[in-house]
Image (cartoon, rainbow, N blue to C red; front, top):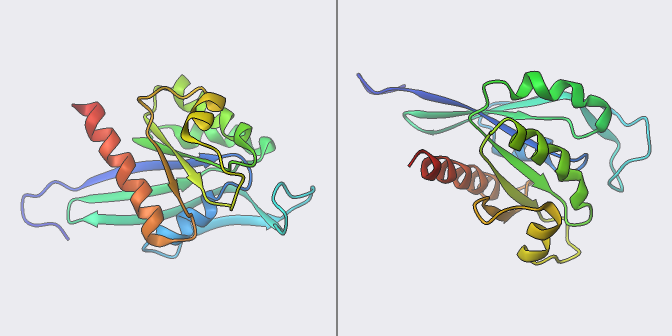
Length: 178
């Protein structure tokens, strides 16, 4: 509910990255509703050890930050064969989070290129998979990120940590709006 006269702001936020970087996990951990997810058994060897399912369309969740701000979260599938879904899902996006795994930084390149090509503001969130350690400079260098793109570390399994990432994105969007 909003107070009388208060404007409700619903924002479309995309969570993207390579296969196995944690977009489904992030959406699940932070959503206040039971998230919609479209996972199916993996038909090819898993990018991440122990994975048995993969997202084949999208994940959807919602997070109300305050009485005026609601985030609609769309987790994009990371496997190459599902990239045809990205363009329609990116339409109308307010901002995005690109998830990266330091074990496979190149998995984020497609997401970054898509978002930059659409002039969609984004931040990069390094999901903690336990290594290898990469410095901020190494990550920025390998992903060719400028200093204007925020880079944060988090754990997609943790509600507070995932919420921190979304708040960092909103701060970035506010800075860009000036």
